[in-house]
Image (cartoon, rainbow, N blue to C red):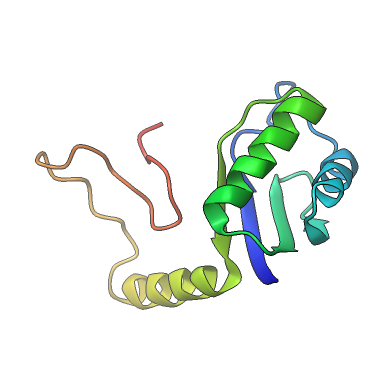
Length: 119
């Protein structure tokens, strides 16, 4: 089993999309994720799973929707991928802490973890 970090976008902000982390942990554990841990009410989840990141993100989305009635974007990356992102971001920030604006030729501005920055 591989260790992953899941980021659930837009939950527990204000009164919309409230998710109890205990319910989320229970739902994910029931679906086969192991050693599920959450960070406060952030929507950040650490776990182990035998499937790949894309399938696991879809599984988490399904648990949120079917068990908790919440639709949210989910990004899953391995712990090793996060280590690489942190390493390369740290090097880049030591040179320039700003992320340059997207050029006019780019169709989307993306973040190394995943997703569109313009939302």
